[in-house]
Length: 309
Ligand code: NAP
Ligand code: GLV
Image (cartoon, rainbow, N blue to C red):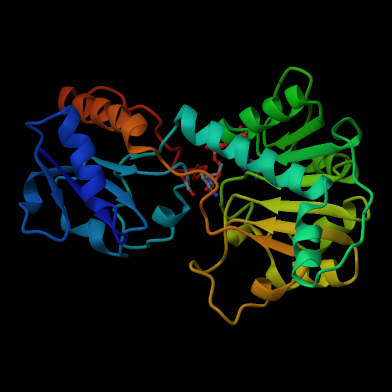
C-alpha cells in the first residue's frame, strides 16, 4: 500500500514532508517521480491533471486536499467507483469565516471605495453602515457556511442562511430548497456564496438571482467561479442593481489578464486564497483514512457521489 500525491502547483513536497513527519515509514510518492503504480491505494490530490487517476489499478481512495471536489467530477476519466474524501477542518472553516468578516467590514466601512479615492487623492467622505443594521445571507450552510453564519451573528450582524435541507442554527434564520430561495434573497443585503459547485448550483449567481436581491446588495463569491455568470454580474453592477462584489474564485484561475473583472471599479478581487488547507492540521485525517483503508473500515469525510459534495 502507498500514497501518491498529485497536484500541479509547488506544494507536493510540503504535503509529502507533512505526511512523513507524522508517519516516517509511510510509502508516499510524488506523481512526478518513478513510483510503483500497482502499490498505490490512496491518491492525495488537488486539481490533478485530467486522466492521471486512471493509472492506478488498485486505487481505493481519492482524497481531495481541499473541501471542494467539483474538479474530480469534472474529470471524465477519473475512476467512477473509488470513494472520494474531502477536507473537513476547523482552520479551513475559521479562515473562511475570518475572510468573509474582513470583506464585509471593508465594504460597510467603505474601505474599497476609499482605496480607489486615495489613488486619485480624492477627499470624499461616504456614509458607512453599522453592523447591527446589516443583514447577511449565506448560501450553503455546510462546514464553512454554518461557522461563517454563526460567527457573523456573534459579531452582531443579522444573519440568514439557505441550504438544500432545513438547518437549525442558533440566532440564524434559515431557509431551504427552491421555495426558500426567493424570501432569502429578497432580504439579503450582503450575499455570500458558500455552495459546492454541482450541476444544480452551477451559474446560480446570475441575472435572475441578482434581481431578487434588495437594490444595492453586495455579493461575495468565495465558493467556485462556476457559480457566477460573469457577464450578468458586470451588467448588474453597471446598472447599479448591485453596489459591488468581492470575488475569490473564477472560471479560469489564474484569471486571464484581459478579463473585465480586473479593472472593474466595483469588483474587489482576491486570488483564491480565502481559506487554504493547513497541512499540519489536515494530515492526521489523511493518515487516519489511510489506516482505515488498510483495515477495511469506513472513511472519514466521504463525499456522496450522487450529490457530488
Ligand atoms: P459542505 O459542508 O458540503 O456544505 C455545502 C452546503 O451547501 C450544504 O449546506 C448544502 O445543503 C448546501 N447545498 C448544496 N447544494 C445545494 C443546493 N442545490 N441548494 C441549496 N443548498 C445546497 O461544503 P463546505 O465544506 O462548507 O464548502 C463549501 C464550498 O466552499 C466547497 O465546495 C468549495 O467549493 C468552497 N471552498 C472555497 C474555498 C476558498 O478558498 N475560496 C476554500 C474552501 C472551500 P445540505 O446541507 O442541505 O445538503
Ligand atoms: C478550496 O477552494 C477548497 O475547496 O478547499
